[in-house]
Each structure stands twice: as C-alpha cells, then as structure tokens.
Length: 186
Image 1: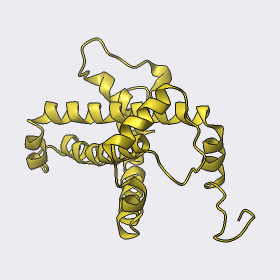
Image 2: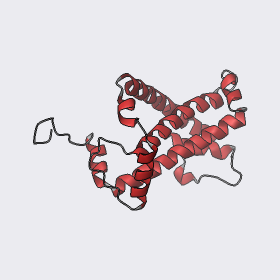
Image 3: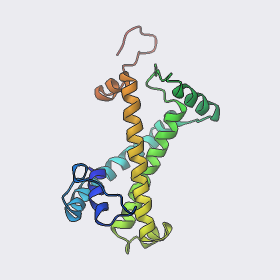
Image 4: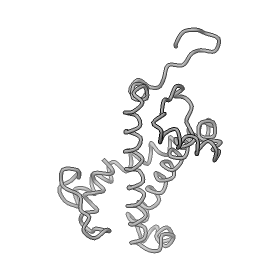
C-alpha cells in the first residue's frame, strides 16, 4: 500500500524527469487520494516497524540472526549463487548475503520513516529536512529508499521462488524445527 500510494503521490511532482507510474500500479486516482492511503498505511508500517525493532533488539534476534558477517562468507555465498547452488537446507540460518540484505532493508525502512516525516512536516521537522540538504533532498532520499525496498522485495520473491521450501515456511509460520535430541518434527 505504501509503495502504490507513494507512486501516486510521486506522479504529482516527479523527481526523475520522464518517469511516471501507470494507474494500474498506483493506489489512488490522484495525489490527494494517494496521500490519504499513504498516511493510513504509514501508521501501520511505523507501529509494526517499531514493534519489530524493539523485539529484534530486546530479544537479541538481530544479533543472533544477522551477525557476524565475514567477507569470505559473502564471497562464497555470491559464488554459490552465481553457480545456481542456492539450496538452503537450514532455513533458520541466513547466509552472508541474506544478512546484508536484511540489514539494508531494515535501514531502508528506518530511512523511509525519517524522510517521510521530513517531507510530511518540513517546518516541524526542519532539522531532518536540513540533514538531507533540503526538501527536495529528503524527497530524493525517500524515493531512493523506496527503490531499495522494491529491489529487496523483487530479489526476495525471486529467490523464494527458486527455493520453494522457503515459501512454505513463510506461509506456515516458519520451518519445522527438530527438538534437541528428538528424531521427529515439532
């Protein structure tokens, strides 16, 4: 909802000359209507994102799942992926590239909230606006953050389709884990 409505808002004052999004992929028939959808979805995203960050840091899940990242592991993962050796036997363990991409997606989400606040209330958040070099700089950062998240989603979905057990795990709430010392699934 955020992406589709954002594209409707974007079309009213484009950043990249000649780049417009067709009505078929936009939410809202004009900028004001798209803004209403964007603001409604913004609260859902911000509150869920805040809960996710609090949970990830408080439980140590981010540290456990996303760290450490070693250069040798990144190189090995890229090499294996380019050779289409993308079997992912243990879905509870992220490879080095997944770790990087998840960190980038989390940071892009945080950037979206910060730049979104800056362009939503540029007078009240003038300090934020100045961090981005002005209103247009904040808009550009917001647009680029959206592009990063769309790219992440495209890669994520493509790789999930190439490793079907990941889709099953996503739809059923995660992979079935064996209990320590048990032979069956739980």
